Structures are given as C-alpha cells and as structure tokens.
Image (cartoon, rainbow, N blue to C red; front, top):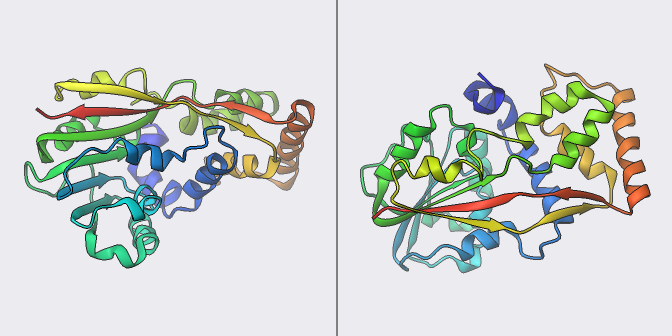
Length: 272
C-alpha cells in the first residue's frame, strides 16, 4: 500500500497534528501569485441556503472555515470530521468562540456516521487521494447529501509543483522518490477525479484555480520538503540539509525567484 493511502502512516505520522500541513499552507500563503486566498476562493463557490447543514470530511485544522468566519451565516450548522484526533483538536482551537455552530467527530470518509440525506453541502478538500477505497467513500458522500445538494472536492493535477521534484532529482533521487507521494498524486486528480465522481453524481463541473508560486526564500521551501518526508524511512543529516538549502538558495539567486507551477481545481458534483 502506498503511503499516501496508508491510514496508519497518515494518522500516526503525516497528520498526527497540523505541523506538516501548516508548513505547506505557509509556502502557498506567502508566495502564491494569485492574490485571492485559496480558502476564500473555495468559499466563494458555496451556494446553499442561509439555513443549511454542512459536512467536511478530512477537515484537518479547520482552515477553510477559519479563513471565512466572518462570512458564515449564523444558521449554518457544521459537522467537521477527520480520522486524526490531533487534527480535530487543532480545528477546535482554530474555530474558537464559534464552536456552537460546529460539531467535531473522528470519522472515516469510507464510513460516514450520519443518516442518509443529512447535508446540503459536503466538502472534501484535498483528501480523497488519501482514501484507500475511494468508490466506497464517494458513495458515502453521495448518500449523506440531500437531493439538490453539492459536493465540493478539491484536488491537484499530475504535474502539480513538478519543479520541486525536478530540483530534488538533481541532488537526491531517493528524496525525490520519497516526496513524490505528496506532489504528483495519481489516485484522485484533476485528470481523473471528475470521472470517478460521475459514477454516482449526475452533474460534475471542474473549476480550475489559476495560481503559481514565486519563492524568494530557501528556508520555507526546505520546510515544505521536510513536511513530506518520513524521518524513519529517510533520515536527514545536517550535511544533506545544508546541501538542500544551498541548492534552493542558488536557484533563487540565479533566477530571482524559484518558479513553481500549480495545478489545482475544485470539482463540484450535484446530487439531483
């Protein structure tokens, strides 16, 4: 089983808390060329009644709602689920005094613990490629939606952030292979995600998020790389870390910035 769909690895190491995810979010926040924040852009595509029930599977630290707290109607009610207890704790901390609207529970997207036709909206933000049995999870997402409800599923393309992988190949092919699971995901992508959802959803739309990165500092880029590695499988000594830092610094100095292509989309699926 590949690490990106290995629940034990994901729960106990990669997503035991939000530390790794925060390093990745920070790189995008600081160096994205699109002035619109990703979480605000996703929120802009939500079109549901002022009185609605919302489910997010794989909610992580709750960043989608944290970045839009001042835009959330008072009568929306949320079920936020994640299979990582550490992530749920951080989501509770991030959403602060708004807890009355949010209910937090540990849950697996393959077995969603809610009745049929409960939610007006279901969100799966950059997480379906981590699910071992995606057809089952997609069926579950469809099941808990009301008739007329929407699924918002975000994912990346096969060539997302390919420049990082290419740069690592120059210095350490083993590291490039280790981190590939977090860049070029293949299980649920822009290229094949809509087709997978079409197995149960009648109406599916793909909406690209136009963006790229122009990174001008080496350290945040190194933090991003390290957030994707398994220290048990690929220990990194100070010498290798310095080599990575120097490689990134040289590239930035030579180009003025390190350009990274991004291929990210929102897939909206309607339950008729």
